[in-house]
Image 1: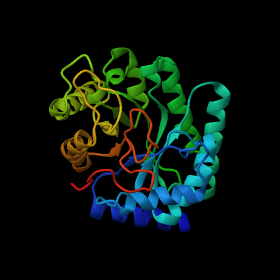
Image 2: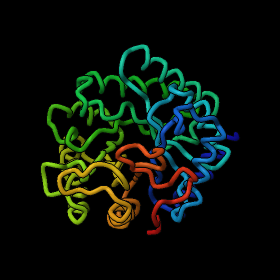
Image 3: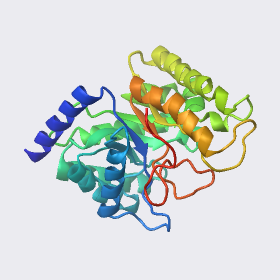
Image 4: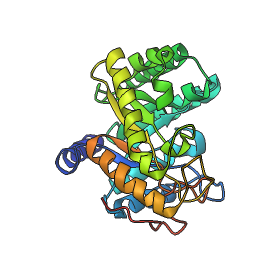
Length: 294
């Protein structure tokens, strides 16, 4: 009953406060490489809630690695948050461990904490697998979840990849397998085109529209989610794209704010502990690096 009540409360919040899931991509490790504890995940959720948009959803990349779900799910429930779950697909033993971790989480906590499940992340972009193999893995995870009491088709299972992967006809089998399609788009990295910050808005939304056009042709009615985008505050220059706090602020104001208002969106990223390039929106003290008001 607790999980059902939690799910109903979240549904009410989503329908009245915001028509779309919105939040950030969040890594499973700290700056020193240590795996996050439940307390660390709670801090991430509470940090998101403290931002101007009062975000409550996050995307994670794996289920078993660093005991992600074992620690993040209780943190989500405690703080009123939800998770776009990642299931790592590469190599059979890892995939099996990922499925086992997800299965244990839903058997223990129900489905109320789940935004959706992404089977894999940028596998097609990297060329690590075939479309047919990945499609079967999506069907596999959906089938596993369907055996758990409380499951319904509202639990969407899909895949996240780069926009350049989604528009390739060879990957249509994956689209057919998906309940949702998550697209990653970074004008900063589109270094074969004019990609200065002033071109960022048009480059990004053009990429989203290209994915929508392909998806509607292959499987009409399937929603395209923004699973990743962002602009770095530090890092190398990519053609005309300059990493800076000012440009990250501008990209947030132009792209993030419009994306959050128009569809399910997960920004990259909450914090990346000064990676290079660095896309994190909060610093080592969990304070915003630039204004996140919309």
